Amino acid sequence: MVPYKKVFKELEKREIKYLIAGGFAVNFHKVQRSTVDLDLVVLLETENWNAFLGLMGDLGFQPRLAVDPTLLTDEKTRNEWIQKKNMIVFSFLHESNPLEIIDVLVKDLPPFEELWAERLEVEAFGDKLKVIGKLHLIALKERAGRTRDIQDVERLKNED
Image 1: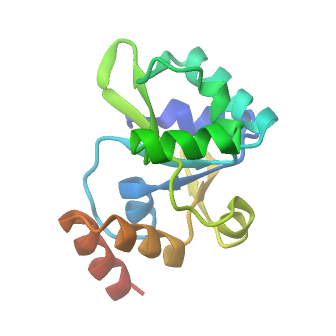
Image 2: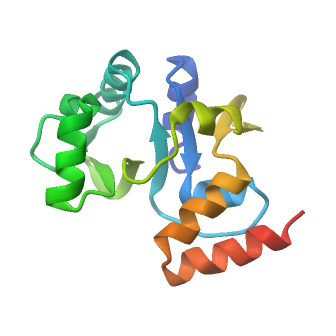
């Protein structure tokens, strides 16, 4: 079974505004990359975020941190978590498989509307999935600066 296939299907079915980022996005941009976790950018507007939280609960994903995840939509709280807790992502772990991890990116992102306007839509698993655009993906990976991110950037820039 394809990891996270049910997550992708439900994101589409529930009309949640999201973008696939990270290693999965690299693959959708036609660069082979193995990855375990699923990185997402989710519109942090209350109704959309609450729908996403409902989906996470329904599929057996729980927040990694013992905090109220609904507070992430509050910009002041989110910025406090970013500053004081060094939060880069808000993680969800699957209750029966801790290797199934969904990370929602929260730090140093352009406005969601800008990311949404530049998205790539990919036909996969019977749905049209929303993937962060190549230039934004490269920018995020350059900011992350880890060795594998820099390798991804080089490979993404060479793929046309």
